Image: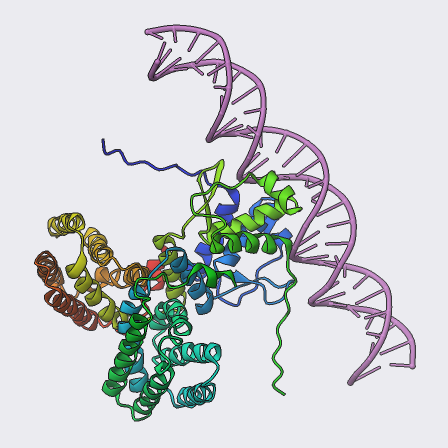
Length: 247
Length: 247
DNA sequence: ACACCATTAGTGTATGACAATACGTCACTA
DNA sequence: TAGTGACGTATTGTCATACACTAATGGTGT
């Protein structure tokens, strides 16, 4: 038989409340930054208890639709990129995605980011990119710091692309991928050197507003990364091993 | 002065509770599918009230880390792709991302998906893809249904890629992008025709296990989509207008 | 005008209660 | 024996109420 079925869910009060607020946000009735009434007032507005309101608020909160800048102030919020990214990363970790999967996608996103950054990156952002690069060069010996700055470098490039979708999409992925750098450097000590060269080229290309060169170098850079992963034998390893998760 | 500061957040009990559960899940102590105790038991285990536990659970729930298959059963869960996707889509809508931004990224992801699908797509999935395509051809006159099946088609291709990162990454994006199809068909009636041709070619290429051809046609297909967007003058329009959101 | 203090309001948490209902058990029937 | 039905129980969703703590408010004195 091919009977489709699913538990029909009763509409719980806290869910209805959350849905209503969400709808009003999506529809524009409530605008980001706007202040919401206190819990008691919300409770009587919707004709439920404060506990119920609170459960709904907790959900909206962790969905990033509302937040409390200060404990007493509750306002409508724009979901933050980093929040969403860490959410996705977590999912990827739980799914045990492999370096291969991460890399295949990064091989498309990173060159695109570089290309767009070269095409339309704002000058102020370029300065910051250079700064990050300089710090990366300086941190040569500290692998952890190098990794952090590497991730930051690519994020900065992505932001220069002025494409928010791209930023949103690649962030969780790279959080995990570049983490792998720590694991490959022991086997591939020259990786740091090559990384610096590639980054320099990317910076140059962006400064010269040469999209094609930027794209090519980014592509080469990521491809190079793959070689590192291969040498370290991590291709089909889950991106984060149990031990690392422990931290 | 450049003193950085932020309200240091007290560790609220419900948050500590949620964090603890989350940590145990990430660390593998709690495995997906495993059953959790009831609320009362959790409450006394953690030495807090049931209300507190419930608030924490609401958060974990909307983060996709736990869920209730039936109202009485609470278990550890794997975050679901579609949940995450709709979360991201929502964020994109709120950010008013433009079709240009969506398209630029899709132009990278969709060809990759097609290529990988051709390279390593499992045969059963191919059958389903063909089925979707057939239904799409049949639905020629129903624009809404066409749009739905179009999205589904691309999702299926992505799933055939066997790359979960790619699936996760492209889903939210395409949810919005292909939605645009509804808006462009009035201006570009021949779009449906061209779409069917492209899809056929993609199916063929996948069946023939010809990655390059699959990639090329996917690329052409998305590029074609852009022409439609241009003709409809939507390039820099937010992907979903206020009116559409209303629904 | 400014610093200080008291008042107030709102949040986080706790206690306790109750209706609705999913689940397990057990007897009953075919 | 397997399936059905009834029943008791445990658990959830919701409610009401209370209290400590603290951020915001406003007034007071200098």
